[in-house]
Image (cartoon, rainbow, N blue to C red; front, side, top):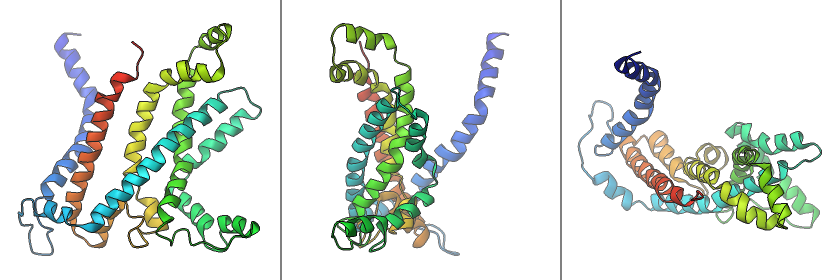
Length: 291
């Protein structure tokens, strides 16, 4: 096969993925950026170019800033806990244990459940007075608590549910990475008298850092795209205490039908996620490999 034919053959192999990527990722992103500079078309009234007015309205929107604050708290509360818990679970189920396969299945089961099913399970847990959490609290003499109706607790309730669902998913990646490590490393460390904690800190953890980077990228994206659970559990309430960026975009676009303002919020969200991903890949990736 000539060089030209090989090049054409390679591009033809890439063509289906390229068409899907352009059709469902790049073109919608460009269309969203374009729509953010116009008003929302309604009926026979076409969209009107308004420049940066949508962005100015966004900076003056108190609900937007509350959603940003909520999302940052949510991300800072769920990402480190999910990643650390996933790593610990992976290390545990990587050992030779009785019922090891069942334990792995138990950890991974929340991941395969549909998001709406997970929301309904936790809705039962959080239901005041007769929910599972309040039933346990009654046994210890505590009263009923409206977990999802209290602005001080609702966001933390979402965070607990997210950690429960996401940790098992991240565990699979860590487990796969641990199984790729050579057993000779542990044997050599044992001969040298290295303890389990020292071996984990000096050997296991550094070798897991490439996997940790991959998990962090997915965890950050996941923390800013939560919408199903918010709609099913709280609807963003009470008083926007559980409103996150994507759920707010959903409300603006489909409840209030202001697609132009929703596009503006989407552009900001995409820019923030792109910046975080670039930082993780360009800065953190240089610090995670042995030299």
